[in-house]
Image (cartoon, rainbow, N blue to C red; front, side, top):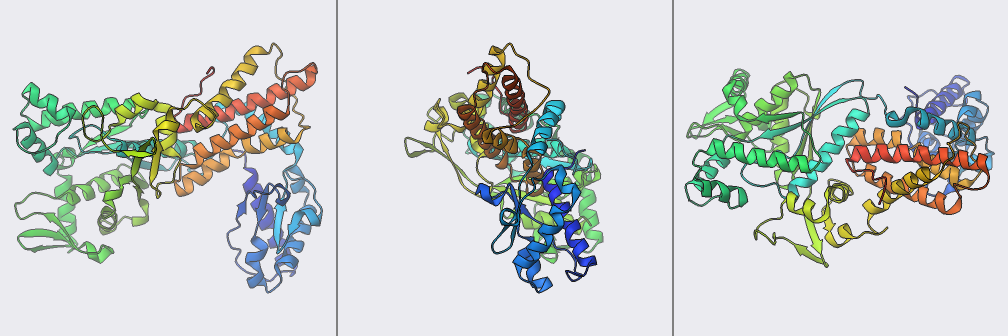
Length: 527
């Protein structure tokens, strides 16, 4: 698989530093990680590295002197001519020692051809090398409809799994059905007319005279599955908690912890010595009434997933589940797994805002707003895009007024309009795009520089799991296209120029569609 330009620049820096060490222009040291950033100011390059500043203390030289040494090595390296523009020291070095890199026009032209060749495969990378990752998300109790708080983890988990697959991992999407325990007992009380869950599903079940809590759970699960389908999510596996008890996996885990001396009987209950593994206190596995806590089945579930061959387990959790992290990490470590391979992602709260005020209650039921209601109100594309725009650690304000607006202020409309505009141009033209690519205008080059960032966005996302990069990238790409469109006429009397620009917008169409596909948002050809 072709190397990304960012990786090529890093390798060039690494090789240059190693050569300087061999020549004794720099002392021998273990090379720290080389980082590149994309500067906001165009004169600072398409990529910039602070490696000279990092090495200054190690090499006991000024950052500027080190930058000059590295810069001279790079400009004299024939390999750099394959993707970098030849620059002067004034262009390539900025105080106090940043090294700036400018992508060559020839490389950009080659990349447009590459995009047109790869089509739907453009953006694929293989850093995952087939490693299996389990991504569990939503996993709401089967006691009522999914609400907007569940939506955030749902959309983010789905997109993260899509992106991991694009990066060469084998990511599996999973929903854990909590069909055992206290919530099922409360559901039974509800069906018997006692205090419990009040929602449209339980109202329907009571009206039908359903008394069996497991049949009620199954009905609610089927309704949840319909909502999940409406969200554009397709799970690879729905895993019932009851399977862990029926297969005796919970008993096996209890025995394993006991055999390792990690359980203790006190206060008529069985405790897991989770504090030995960094948890803030020990936890109950079996209550005094003989019933298992959630923790026992949670640990058994972790083991089940590892036994299925998953190397990493990503778990999306609501803001109220922060305490879950310590105890489950302790459980993984107690069973001999690396706790860093259990990756909990905490989703912060969501607020729906309309006319500047928070909307808390459903107009129809008088309780929380469901995902179904939101999708009916603003559509699935808008729901997805808006929920993905903020990082997990930040609270999300979902602006209903903006979500319904059909203008460039609405980021979803803005991105989809760029795609529809490209499709319209291609439909109207009876000229075929050229196989030859020649970039002459700055707006053309800037557009291609955005196009080639998709593999980098994918790589960064699977490293830190921050999926908000993808919708933000889609917006930036749409901005670049709209800017290009305003400055460069695509269809003109100049046939050669028209052919070349049709190729450029065809490449833009591919990258925009691939990005929207990862996000799970439609790419409409007409608007």
